[in-house]
Length: 466
Ligand code: ARG
Image (cartoon, rainbow, N blue to C red; front, side):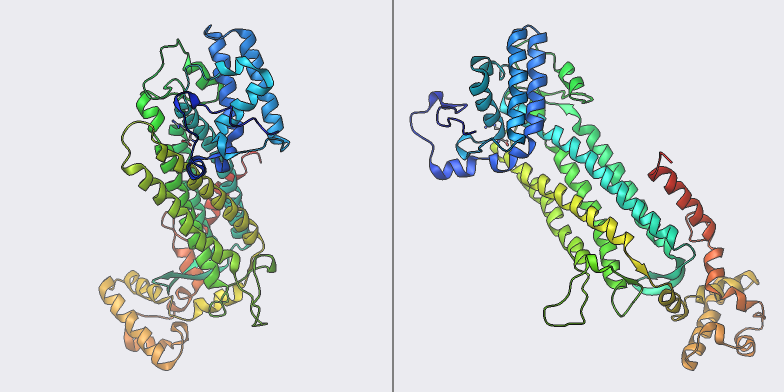
């Protein structure tokens, strides 16, 4: 459906000359804001219904507008709307088409409204819908983590500090750490959505409107918690976008960290996991290669998500009140960041489900690197040796074993007693990684019983219906 463009400018009245073609190009937002046509139409329908309730337009006019907008929506959904830069944005396209369908009452829709409060409303509605989708995708990702953890109960791997083997931990514990990050991501999301759920309509261009509006009823109809308290703030506030972009940036940083671990773990150097073919690629020259591209892309895409946050903050930093056209630059970053994070979550969840864990390799890695040296020190401390001294003695045992090219559990009792007569036969079971893991029962520690409880709790929260 091509709309008769030149006749439909929302602001043609005072202009004598046509718009410059390049100006038209950079001015137009239709290329991207068509994404929220649904929100634009919903907001307009709620506005029209309120105008009628308040006696500002007649019930028949409101009826015609609401019905006409339904048709516009159907046309856009069917791909029948032809978008054009000369009509600038989605607001103008929708209104212009409405005018063609219903005639004059269309001109009354914009009563007591400006594109400034309209676009702020649309974007808030879009963000709220995107937030729900993101939350669901995060939930799905968490489920994949929990399923992988449950399927590998009891698998022990090296826990690291400084990427040096440190102490044995349960793989499930390690995976649940990412699940915790995702809970915080979801809380952050919910928190910023709470502030996004405020209606700017009624602010009009910047100062409010003389018409006797009832924006609170529109807010209710649109599922928002209330209206914006200050009209200048209502049209210029994009905090909700910045907050969402920060929440997304941090979520993506978390995904990137997990991706980095998967990249390391799938290398020959680690050999802890095998990625399924579905999430790997080959090399055009090296026939043996299987590359973890999906994980690398998740890591790499954090750059653009963080870039979106920075880009918006820079757009906002110098803006005087109230609306400025700079704000049009808020949309592409938020669309891109939402798309990117959603895509990454939708790749990561099945990738985790298709991950093959090499418990044997993990176990072997636990054996090498003296991960039980702390166990030896704790053993001595339990025998009454001050911990500082115990640490020193355990260090001596590590040195001796290192020189001999053996592990701590392979040192003989005689060798141990030379280091310290406090060390008895009962030291050996303490050096077993299973014991080391089971002993870490402090709250949040890696002991199996803690991890089991955490898994159970996660199940309850992630599959609430079961
Ligand atoms: N496309 C514009 C935006 O995204 C809509 C609001 C235009 N308002 C105006 N006063 N020109 O911000």
